[in-house]
Image (cartoon, rainbow, N blue to C red; front, side, top):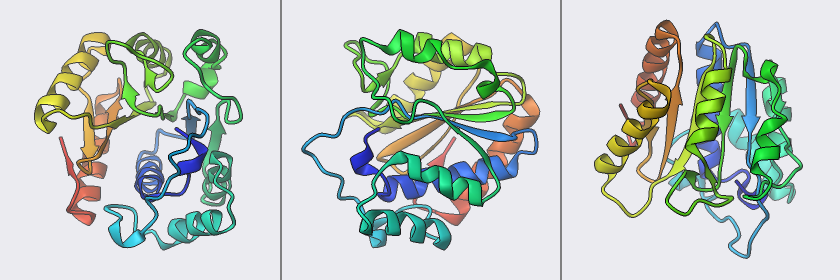
Length: 228
């Protein structure tokens, strides 16, 4: 992700969904944010027209918080910690001030403490999403997902951000779910607004069922979304 996009409509969706998941699963005691932060580019974030938001807009408190960050020109992922702490969530932002690069990726993930992956919603937020044939700093590799999944405990959930590429939607989702299954033996749950997708993985069948109900209710609240 990039700081320049902080607070946009995708973040409104993202952080509201995260709050719903953490609050809805008793076993999850903390939120661990792995932002994979990359340098800002010339393409400045402008998806901030709340009338075009597809999700999260019923959370007035979050919307006001993000709007204030934008109006104050404080577009920095570090700020979201303030919101979650006020909501009573134990929040860990991993390497929130360090830019992620393809060259340093091994070093980046090697310093992730095991306690960050215990009883946690672990959210990985790359610029684009899952690995491709020529992956770079905008992608998380399947080997990294496997390691995160294997190291997290039975009470944790792994959440992964993904942009839709130029590919048929259902075909793409089915392919990615199969690939994630191949590396984790787990069938991912997903939710999408037809532009971005969030994939969820967990080892715990009880948590998986709770997660399905949370996402089902979330889509009921925001009918432009869909899930599976």
